[in-house]
Length: 118
Image 1 (cartoon, one colour):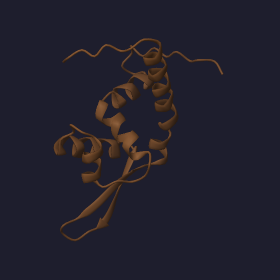
Image 2 (cartoon, rainbow, N blue to C red):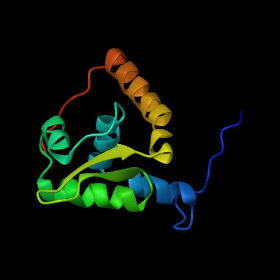
Image 3 (cartoon, rainbow, N blue to C red):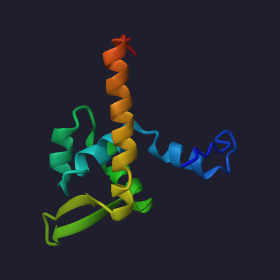
């Protein structure tokens, strides 16, 4: 299979649009957190240190709009209970993200990464 190199510098490039959508560290971490199945928002906050409730809600809603996650209402009455899971489209990110993990692991083994503040 030949590697297709799109012109990601063009705003209309679908690859650029996908990269912009997935560019948020929270989105990638949420995909990882949901790979093992649906979770309630409180579970996701515990699994992803540093994410605020506001950011979590905004990211999940945006990912739902993009078709990456689905929201399932477990209990409609107050207090409402919902959980989020990856859609089939969201699950297609598993292999590309695994490739990034393999690349990062290989790089770390070859040369330790220097952590810089900020």
